[in-house]
Picture 1: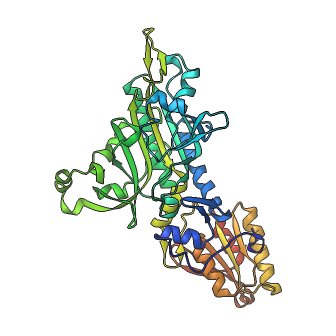
Picture 2: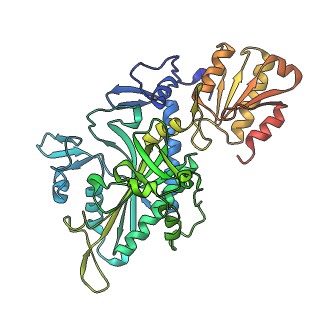
Picture 3: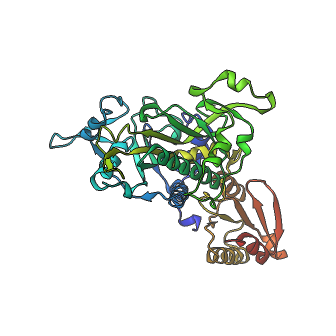
Length: 440
């Protein structure tokens, strides 16, 4: 993509009401625009990252055996009355009446609707386990929307729902999602720590939040230091084997959110192993048994011929929130530093003298070669000053910058900058293309 043809409305200064770094940088980098309190338009650069994150989530859900569908944003109030949550949920739920006086709501979550879908088609124990998921926009009418996409009212979320015959099967489904979450966050360059958490309005007695440590985190978190550096299990696990040891490896070490914190248990750790910090929740998983299947009569006929309410779980990832979390965890004074897996573009080409025939030729050659090799490239072919071009590239945080100037072209070299480390080197264009496309 040539910058002269792109839509990238960068700002020199963030609006004064942007309180945290991710909100400030997303506004400055032209990723989002606020349309109402807690409601944002996703501009091209932000939308590219959003789709990258969504695709990683989708791939890891598919790998773990979940099946994608798509549910509507509007739900019937009567479904929520079946579960008993319609009146209990509170003012965060946006309630709507259509022209026929039917009561609807803009879904804040989908336990009721997925249970209704499941019960309409599944009758036998032979058809479970099942795990159904979708990636869908949600709405929760937060009293105080703030921190940009971190605490917005409209947000993109992946929610998955498992259905099993018994508690043992439900635990296996829970473990698959636990491990899948470790992998998907790792692919985004995040160190997400699973922490014992309150089940809240979702219900149940087994729940973990996945927390990214950041100074601007919403709440205090407490954990064993080893959890922060523990690597993800990776994709080559036996998804339908025994994953309990992988889960135990992490849950055996102390980790809890503020609501579930046990000061005595935490202080029992050696001082060197205690870590107290601020954290951002990026995922939350629950196992809640028959909380929804029993009142909504989602049953299957078991091997004994008796109807049994299915055991359920739900598993959420804040897809849009993740952009903010990644920025909070990966930035410097110049701007965003995107991990390669979610960067909007892989490489930024900076033409230091647009209109100079030799510089233009080298940039065009680099752009064509990188694009052909499968790299996503943003080519700054504008006539802005060099300093402004560098500032924009640092602000938007692309992993690599390829800098082409008259002096280097005359010497047969170009310059490359690694955004994360700041390291630079010069080499021939062919060498640089080879280096940037390894493993492409």
